[in-house]
Image (cartoon, rainbow, N blue to C red; front, side):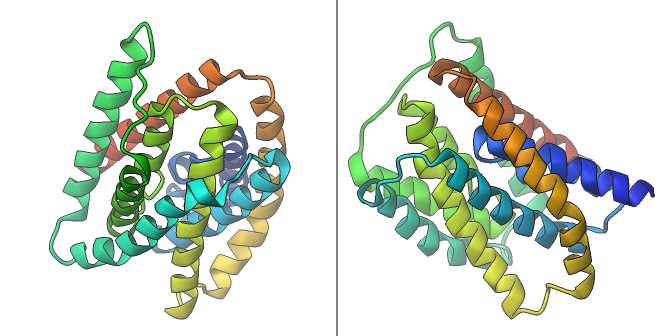
Length: 243
């Protein structure tokens, strides 16, 4: 019973955060799931639930996705994933995650302490592609594909719809590729299928509630909300991997 309740609670809370902010499934869900699910099962389960939540929230929110704006991130991200996977053999994953976590803590803490959120909208498509490439590397090496594109979109000072129109399809593309890789390698077992069916009601309900809450926040509140979630993500990464 405790397994069912914790899995459902993790799916519900993760779906809510994803519906509200457009990311954060792993950040929220793993905090509960790892108490009752082994990591080899939890990792692909997070990817599956993330893909489901991203699809549901994209269909519901319908941010103004523009391919001309999105493609540099996608091309860079797809190119970066194999580089990140190759780096797995040369770096210590825990230390790498701690470094990313410390960056998120420093960046988000500074911005949240500032009286006015800074903006930087330069570099054009080359910079966007570089951010996507770096995000792909982080995704391949540590499962953290969304961190840098989310930071970059917030730094541009865009409204909430414009931000989600970039980093949410980007995350969906990278996660879908990861899911296809899991399927190809035979990682998606019957047990993962059973857990996915258990998560599905909580994910769907959570996304629906999160999307309703998303409609109640303005652009400034959304930027600060994203910073708080990224700060929480960095803290979880740092503490969990140091331990």
